[in-house]
Image 1 (cartoon, one colour):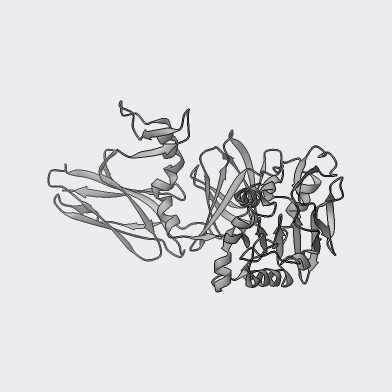
Image 2: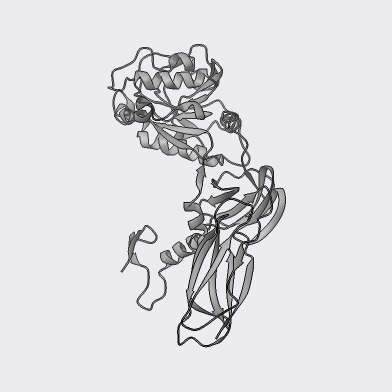
Length: 436
């Protein structure tokens, strides 16, 4: 019996896949619904694809998890919450990211040069080399967005005076003080309370928002060719983005302006959607694009691409033509999958013998002409709409592939058909086989 854990229901518990009457438990049914496209061949193509991430990175410093618990650190909550907030911020903007760690930067395994934006959630403890690499990243044109207590310790938790990033950030500190819970002078958001670091002062940087106590909340400082942004509060305290927007929301979004254009989604009223997670994979000459929503009702969406491309909706199995914008309905918990290409997807070429005898093994060959990448498809041998053997989940590319079907000695003679269903386009092709 396969068991899995679920938090659905009261209390959380373990369920099997099937009930005693052989019907599916509700969580198992949801799982099968969410993964249907993946199990029909898309998963095979994804395993052969390369994840496409935006040039955005989130920095993780192992010593900082300890730095968050000393010298008034607990007054700002746990460091893991800062990381959750940074991840939610990036995902809300429809961006993807990579994690970079202090150890990989220290060893030289990771270079920051390929990124445009680097987030530092509660990066309180950093080594001299890490600090130098991050400061150099800004000087060379990158954008750093750091929240509370960035760079106040060395990697062995000795206090730095000044902090590792104070010069790049255009700030100074009057000691390492406990959090101050206060509001910001943002029109319409006077009720918003944040935990600010009261010892932070501007020293060349520009304060965009301040508290009634004159504590800066957001500080922007040009440094070299880049920009260092200090959020003087935790990432997880950022209010959730909304279609209505706010002055703070607009400023936060502007800090990601250096990220190249990507697919963006609006709702039925043309307002931006911030509850969809976007993912992309490079599959030869094709791009697989996916959107997945947080729990909620179905939503009509309109996607806008950086440039016009041929679009195939995998959920509806429809070709949308060469377009720059297209509409779709996102229905949680199902992800929405699309295939993008610069030209129309060519038909999968399939060849099979016209006849065979019972007891023989029939070989079918297939390939995709003139377009690189894995094209998943389902292939079956049928007679009178009954499937003989099992459906094969295969992937075609420019190189010839082969599939074998065994004709049993006791299989009935007559007219059979090879049935090919293209997972990307939904197109169905049939080739006859006469069994003697």
